[in-house]
Image (cartoon, rainbow, N blue to C red; front, side):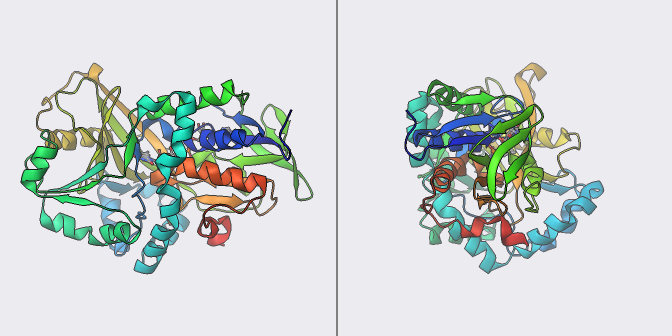
Length: 421
Ligand SMILES: Cc1cc2nc3c(=O)[nH]c(=O)nc-3n(C[C@H](O)[C@H](O)[C@H](O)COP(=O)(O)OP(=O)(O)OC[C@H]3O[C@@H](n4cnc5c(N)ncnc54)[C@H](O)[C@@H]3O)c2cc1C
């Protein structure tokens, strides 16, 4: 028998955000179907660095960011790069992005993000336990390493933001760093460890196990592409798909970087863009860090995964359609070898794999989370940018609050779709 107030809810998008939302909704007694056009977990949730960093409150647009834009345009292999051909399409996003980079706005973004990302492991663990995925989630901390004291000082504002939001850190000098992570290059002289952070050693498998548990508990996986909504007045009647209408009392848009046209179908114009990122993996690496380790200068993370060592990161603003520039992934390998001198100087190609994915990003690094303008029956939950793995579990809980008509447990006003009007 369905629970009192139970609804038929369609969740669009089978990435980490969609499956967390579907699972939390299901736990409240709703009848939930997950709409995925491809295979669950093959979008951005496939190839990320796997970090579940509750400390990730710093937006990408930080004070002084505008001065960097020309450099990004001229160096296609820089940690952050922008394709000339994409500049006209990117202009509105870029304008909002530069405007977001004031100390006050960065501070407000960090304050808004902390309640969404901070409780990540607590909100994920019940789902992980039900899915038998405990072996994929670890709480070992996250290490940031620097080649100079100046490098660390350059990031002082970012560390202030984290501290102001209750993140505790331990600092290490060169000797201590060597003891903590013997595989690291001796070029690193400063390290900052955030103990509260966790990681998953296989993001794809994590999504798959969560989806399997959702199906075992009565959820449906519907393989089709959603393309819009049929409303009767302000009430949702059905989700329109390329294979016909699916009737639903409520819908949740979790289609990652592909959510923009779905929100537009409801009259909400949001400047969602892809911040493309890359990874390069080495199977059976000769050297590996024990825990996810971020090279602060290179803007990449080395994560020990079940399937090998993954170097992931960098940002490329070139849209959803342009082909990958695999040189960017190769740069990660060069940098990774410098980070971990025990790695071989060359690897056979069959031990190397590369990937490019689309971070769903709003220019202020905050997601869109809340009701659509057109109907209280359609909830937005997309645009988590660099922190989607981390923010997904709490996002799922908030989606469940909204669908139930309860006030959400955290302030979601900063995540409104209307903030860009
Ligand atoms: C290199 C890199 C490293 C990263 N590292 C981290 C990290 O360490 N920690 C962290 O927290 N985050 C990280 N991220 C960000 C994180 O991966 C993303 O924010 C997150 O995966 C987004 O999840 P999602 O569910 O919103 O989107 P996705 O995983 O992209 O899922 C969206 C799904 O929707 C489906 N879909 C789209 N349109 C439709 C439609 N119309 N109908 C049906 N289905 C549709 C797609 O097929 C896809 O499966 C990283 C990202 C990159 C690229």
